[in-house]
Image (tube, rainbow, N blue to C red; front, side):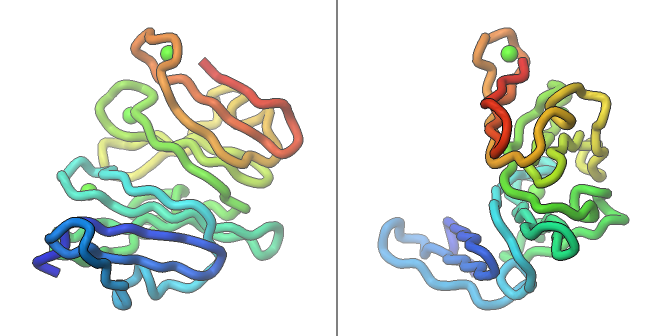
Amino acid sequence: MNNVSIITVTVIGVVINMWAQTAEPGVTFTRVTSGPTVTDSGYTWGCAWVDYNLDGYPDLFVLGGGTGSSSEVNRLYLNNHDGTFTRMTTNEVGGLVGDRGGWFGCTWADFNNDGWPDVYLTCNPTNALFLNLAGQGFWRAWEVGGMVTELAHGQSASWADYNNDGWVDLWVNDAYTPLLIFA
Ligand SMILES: [Ca+2]
Ligand SMILES: [Ca+2]
Ligand SMILES: [Ca+2]
């Protein structure tokens, strides 16, 4: 893996594909076939790269899909700095990887401006906001108003400081309610 410069990940249903680009940009990609990021089974939807522990290496977050009794948990893969990843457990990072649901999308941003990236997740039946505990885990925030109570079937979301006041704002779309912005 010494010649790897870029890794891309695609998650479509149960199929997880991961390609590593060689050091010469634009030349070729090689499919990654080993390690938990490509061998773990389960039904998955969205994904994102995020350096959640701020060690300078991007970690991989993958959302578990499904509904009802077949709902899934999310996955957070810690970058080991050597081309490999370790799947984090509920004991290590909390409900972010233990709470079951029909998780659809995620958007990462430091919403409380403490320097650590937090994440908002869209889900059936309840969307969620997880606060990053200084890279040592995540806490699910419930007392944050309608962003985790008004929506029934979130699809996707995105953070941006649209009014330029120094605090990120959240845009969410939902299958059954009007599009919403939480500022
Ligand atoms: Ca990291
Ligand atoms: Ca934060
Ligand atoms: Ca703002």
